[in-house]
Image 1 (cartoon, helix red, strand yellow):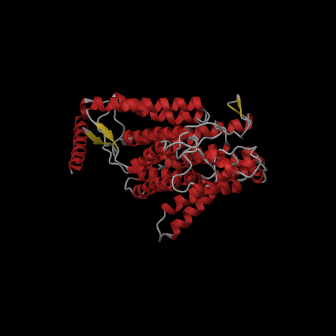
Image 2: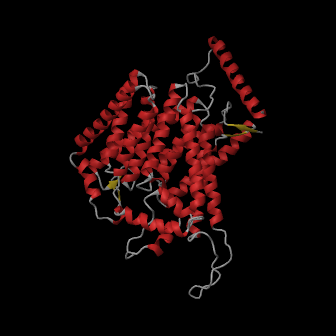
Image 3: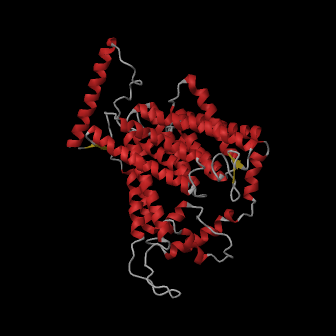
Length: 473
């Protein structure tokens, strides 16, 4: 039997699977952002275990549960398209006396295969999130995990920036980039903070935070914002500002000018607080770092030239692309400089999608964004205040990453992609019908609670009957 993800039965496999989903978010972040091959291999192993637990849950409950949302399908489509790009269509002519070289769409078949299976791992991870965040209790746990971990991670990053700015955990020194927090690149840390700060921001703007907890939320938001600013990422700062005003627009009625003015004022006050806090903690360097990076002669900062070369790649591989992950190989023939500097990424994910996957890949990406924002705008109007705040914050976090992707390649970092997919899942599941949405966490039942047990049982039966009617229809 196959059922949709409105699961009312909780098996041991489901509990362990949900724990591993949460563990994956934290592990990939702390393990240097999961950019090294051994760490990525452990991530793949976690995904495989999650898939097996999914199968065990189906066996134990007698039904395979899944979420019918289309938002995960583009990841599966990207995997299938990557496999298509490495299918040999004949052979190339002899090159340097070597014959029998297969003719494939991808200019680098091995890298394309690796990228394709990376998309498959992301598809399984996102599909599991969509399926097993199946109760209000689990939804709250994920939200608390992102908020509390984001606060603790920001505090650690600030402390490390003061005590050991050039070494991660005081032991790992990065020579080819500027580290921050546990990430080898400060732009990736800024992208991560954009997403962790978005969730509590969404709850605050939606009015879902009780009065006695607002100071805690404001403190967490401010600290995460300060850490982002101290990282010195210009793309991160721009994305944070657009994220805040995105929330202002979504949470303000068109005709409510007074409310709009108030929220804009609060947004400006929040930004000012973050700037002042960063100056007090990091001194003048926290702001002068932006000017230093702008004036830097580093080749990686020369994005205009890289974008120009990327456009040449797109022109010559417009329909099918040069191959997922094949950008470094495709870049070389069009590079008119000395070639001493190896360019791995386009520093613009939208251009790189076109370069790697062509018009077909662009269509897959456009469908993903359409599904995400259509679902997000719908769930942002939920009558449940908490879930409305979750939808708003998660969608704002995704929006911030999409803005940041214009300047950097942050989604190529596994930890950033994992958290991004978690926010995507929260956007979708915030609109799901959950039987325990209005009930507190289950407690040990006593005999005097017999009436409450009966009411919960009736509610489960009511939701189950509603799901059965939808399946039969």
